Amino acid sequence: MKRIVAILLALALVMSCTVAFAAKNEKKNADDMNFEFIIDDDSATGTVNVYHWWTAGGEKDAIESVVAQFGDLYTGIEAKSNAIPGGAGGAMVMKVKVLQQTGKSPEAFQAHPGQEIEPYLQSDLLLKLNAIWEYADLEERALPGLVEMCTASDGNHYVVPIGIHKTNIILYNIHLFEELGVEIPDHEDITWDEFWAICDELAAKMPEGTYPLDLGDQKGWPACQVFENIMLGTDPQIYEDFINGNYNVDDVTRVLETYTRLMDYVAPDHNSRDWYHTTGAMVSGTCAMQIMGAWAQPLLTNMDQVYGEDYGVFTFPGTAGWFGMCVDGFVVSNDSADVASGIRWAFSVCTQDVQEYFSGLKESISPYMDTPDDVYNELTLHFKEQLMDEGTKVYPSITHGTAMPWSASTSLQTQIQEYATSTNHDAAYYANRIVNILREAGVKGDWDLVD
Image (cartoon, rainbow, N blue to C red; front, side):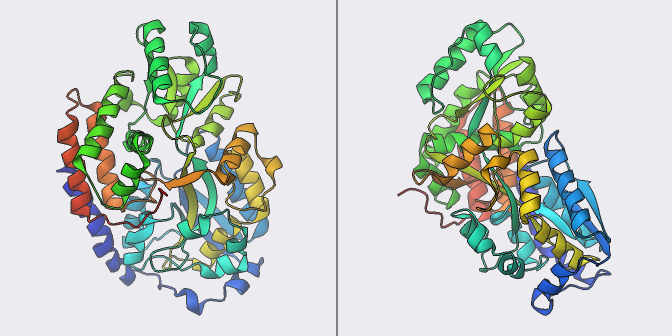
């Protein structure tokens, strides 16, 4: 039933958003607008309502720095930061739908490139931003592979990227490992056997009420991110087939069986917390490890945790040589009260000054080659070097909007969280339910990840 509801909501986004066209604000066509004049007009006045999902410590500071720098660039325009809790983009889609239906479309809002923005495109609700890409030389400045990822199904650019994070990592509490006498491998790319051995030793040595792992999947999506990490770590070909809609019940069952084993080490009340609460639990020692993306870094910094001293990072087992890419960016509504200010905001996030401040505070990888390496801390620079390594393979995220239609990814989040929370981990039963999600959503991709 939950899967059907999610699909109906997605259809509602495509169908009912057309009603928004009759709202107060006239829909703008990018081809009729002089982007260069708009961007260069630093004397302009107006308001830009910016919606994003960055609410945790560190990342909140990062987005507020962008707001402040926008104010320096366009002194006559008021930038209003509006945080929509939820993460991974799911809550944003529904919030924007409501705003657009009521004629209050945000001038700019956070989005992931790829499948996540397709419902907006199908309803013709986004402004084409090719002119910003041309004006700011983004195709020349962008990191390898990013141009293709940020090119929509119709061949146009609607997203201006602001930051990149790695998704396939495990964070761990160094002090707790040392206190318990659990040896930390001298290499980041641990194997499945090493991972299970670490979990077993932690489980045997940790006091009652503490656990080797925690998820913090109150919002659902962290459980789904674990699923995609396990799938890639089981077999990259399974992952490629899955996101292309070539679903196989036996393959998904195999992934879920590994998920079942992992859940033996997870705090039983894992879904009562959000991800950032679990990060705090890892720091306090309630759990030893957390499966989470690199966006946890600024929160850890905000908690006075130092990489290499207080916490460390493992590559998720089986994913050595792979980089799970989460790209954050901003899109512009074509029917807001101040579309021109939305354009200015989207341009501002790719400027070198903003990139230097934002990347430093967000501890994210800048999408642009001209951002100097000295803005990064040790761990972020390490991740950037991995991303830039010719031997590294990049894969798009299911959970974070790039690899799969929004209706399918949100339904998967619900289904996989249910599986993670269930006391009866019937892998074959849930594998069939997951395959049905892809079938009903009509998932068909053309990703080519495996040579």
